[in-house]
Length: 265
Image 1 (cartoon, rainbow, N blue to C red):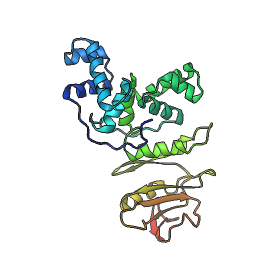
Image 2: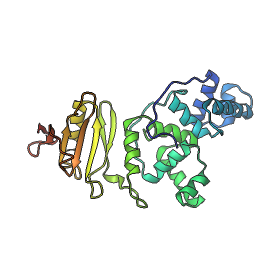
Image 3: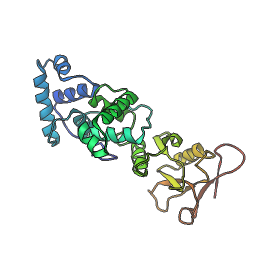
Image 4: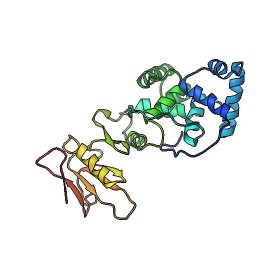
């Protein structure tokens, strides 16, 4: 599997190879790429893809994996971001499996599914993201922040990793929290997870997140804890306020006069 929160680095691909990978990511076939770049035949495109796989140190030429790896290592500019998309657990697992280069049959065996069940899930996931090919699915997943280094992708991965099996997590009550620095994903407190939190670097953004979540079902009581050391994030917490979770100095949700008003604790 690719990392849950990959860091974009810097890597170099020759301009022609980068163009090939960008066109593959958009959804073009090998033959279409050959025509657009004047390479003559699809075989020459397959040759370029083989060179790219070797450059990345990958054992096989799997186009979806090449696209994801190109974004992760910075060899291909990532696509422009769109509003994040909340995928359920099965669709999220499938996207990550395809990004890691896993074949659908292998994915089905790992999940205990039939190939037809996995193919049905693939069709649903393609429709959900608006993709037509596996490489374009990876591109849309990066655009919608399902994959990539954004905090929303990390939140989505962490929440799905906490889900009890075999029942999937109930995503309907999860909230997409808009901040100036990007989006975060918050899940309500439950009997299984009585205290939840978000770590946010900036104080003002932490208060914005707290105001957004305040007074919503499953997100109370709510408080914001100051970091104990300079450079650490503020922590927005909600649910059961245990002795361990309660900050010595912080901010708490004001229970009365207006939506989202906060006061110092």
